[in-house]
Length: 557
Image (tube, rainbow, N blue to C red):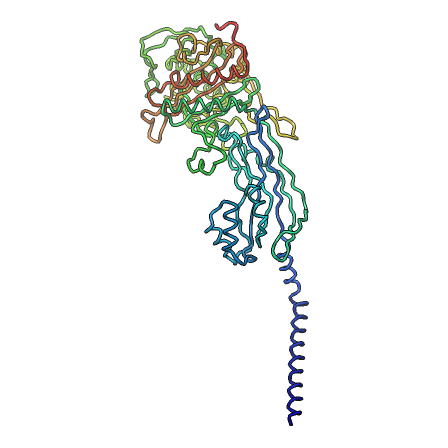
């Protein structure tokens, strides 16, 4: 009987073994057939990872080849929490080596619902290499690039910045992003069972972006920024803008503003809302610097000459407005050149009404380029604001720069045209892009020949003949220019006590090499362009003339 029991148990055990093997065989067959595709895909996912090979962003140089924006090698460190057995230990090691907070990283690595987390983006290669030597399970390292601005604050508002993903977000970085960013490549990283990279299979190489060479001179730019910083501090102004332009070529040598910011710390600057380039985005009423439009138009039409006498009363009624000059006077006869030199509002309005009229003034404003963009290579350039309608008093306000708003770059380009024999040249910041033919700036004549010489001669008197800008004079050089002092408009009329002080000048006046514009927004203590902006012009232009080795005038007058 015992033998039969043993045999039964053996048969039962054998049956169980057979059933077990049958079940395992069926399971294996099911896995090999039904589950095979999904498991193969999972294995591929765990063993291989597609990565993007970043393209090197093109370098931005100034006109002398000094780098203003460069790409710096960096490493993206990421991890797969599903492969990390001890997230606390690995988070502690990674935080210490990379210099990042422990707790946020520990929370990330503990979240097993995620298959990918960034440990640190754009880590310094030295730190990433040190961490890679620790052979942490689940960590991978991918090459990247970090945008760096080696001169920090210099030309920051012009350059703009590229964000974390190396996409241009402001300034030239945004405007030229398509040329600078290049084309990323792709590769596949093969990992072992512990998640460590064992091989990289390149599928498509990255193509680097193009280098860009600017017209800016970093030395002229840095000096202009320093002068503006001192001027804003001295006059407790809201902000300030300066432009230095070569009138013959339209090349911008400097486009500065204060307050500035460090382009390497752009997130802090964006919260302070100081990253926009005021020279192209902001509009302001120009005041008396606009009078060259009125007088230049009448000169070009040959209606007047610099010596044409104009009877100027002590006040002028234009519809519901009464126009006065800065210095009160009775009836007097002034030559046109004296009207410009003394910045007479009344004399300018008489010229506008008598020789131009509404249609003529509109035509000359358009011809000078106001109300339309210059086309400079910066985003968000404003057209300025022309009068939306003309009332009876408009002919008394617009000729003297009120009721019309312009940008600093528009104004600088107009004075550059006066300096360039009456020919307007499109202002530009980009000299050339590597691998592309240079783009020639647009040109057009805005003043009849001879009118430009007359205007320059009269503008010299603004600085030298008891005009409004004696503080703009530069020893050894003849300066021609114009002051402007304009009250700032608000939603309910002009803002009491808020002014914009401007000076635009060209030097040397006989054969101008430079045009320099300075505008100071809301100065305190003094408001006049001749007192606030003209000294800043003198400091900027004096440095530039010496730096560029421009010889002094042989004849000042």
